[in-house]
Image (cartoon, rainbow, N blue to C red):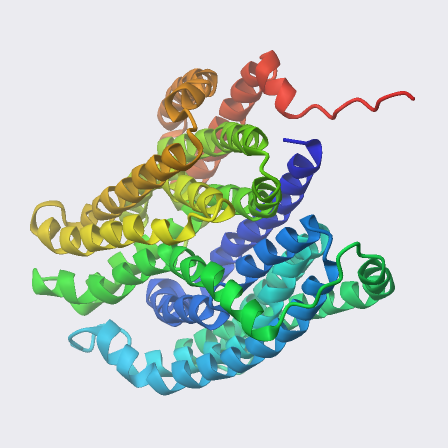
Length: 537
């Protein structure tokens, strides 16, 4: 794999990582303002919104990325431009339909998510209000997502990275400032504050779209010149274009829905399930909120895999289209190495420091003991989330995308079944254990498909990651010992919250230092980050 992909991957990784950091940093002041119940209400809005985003975009952003990289590889840049015009129009139409649908379905969704109202939690009217507020973002996000796919297909990751960061910055500022203004300046209710916060998705999406449009306008002259100089300028009929896009996009829709589906299974079933075994509505909503907060933290290392997948797809598609199978295998190996190098220590460290980290980040939550317990078990799930994202991107790049659906559906069925079957025995751990089983099956199925399609020797290649596993094990021992020592030393000397902050930060610094020191003393890992030397002519 050439260094361009590595740089592009890290460019997107940095942007996505910053976005995810902002995506949970704002939770600290937001939780302080609205509490567990307010955050549960916020989650009720964003759950169905995430599903509608995937449905409204129809998988086209990634399909566009694949389409553009394919025809650029064939020298037909006109096809990319025609697709961009058609795709933007299609995204505006589907965005409007999705917005109207979510707005209309809000009462039905609210009745479903709240479960049995006993007066101890959020009302149905509250849920309807916040869902309708966030629905307007669907008018903007599909078009923005498609433009990102266009730039990524051209293997230009900068515009996507910049728009991702700007979108999140604007969204987070609007959420925190809007909620603060409603509660402190206008003496509004928590429901009103959460409603304004959900509208932050609209403001952030508008800012992200503006960045992409501005960059495109600046590059328009170069793009048109590239089209005119194409060695192959054949126009693709719209019917053929749509047929090819849909053949790519339908599997992309299903794969893109994977994590939102799993999260929404929990969001929409936890209240009713836990109430069925004697929990009050308020207590069930607390469990719902805690699992949602744990998911936010876990998605930070998963963002690395998302960036890998976005960068990997155009490059693998181009190599596969040219018949360069060995090059495809090399890219897969290097991306897996990068993924394990970055994600494995993050997941393990987060699990070991779950209790102090949860207390540090969500100090206003009254359920930090439950939150730390849930996060401790949920953190390693980042590895399976990430592996599914990467393996799905690989299969999509080699035209095996339809086969991904079968493994995903099997996993979802297992998740639904185990959420019910394990509840009485494992209680709060049930949604987590069910997710492990469902995603584990899907990931194993994807690896089987890759092996079959490319004759890729998965076990020997994964064995090359053993050095990272050794380093992570050493790091884990250091983090575990340090956290236990700090817990003993700080007990009674400082307040509990201060002790959690110091334990989390100092243990994380020690673990990161040990891991990075061990890793970069290894030549094989250093080679992953080396720039190729320029040839002297």
